Image (tube, rainbow, N blue to C red; front, side, top):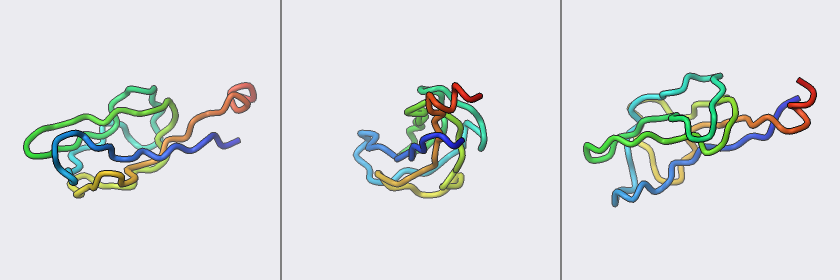
Length: 90
């Protein structure tokens, strides 16, 4: 049974910029991650920032590629959270 989907959205990083560049995905597609794990590295004005997983789950989609220019609020990927019901059935 599928779990709940959670979109990963680029937050305002407080760097005074509306766009950043995707550098490298730190978690491969399909990987199980824990909230706080580093998912994607982005660069803005020479500053590198690691974006953490906001929730625990499996990375099911990467909607941006490395070197893409990203905007605040853009969906970067999707995490599938396993529901309590799903955990009981596994």
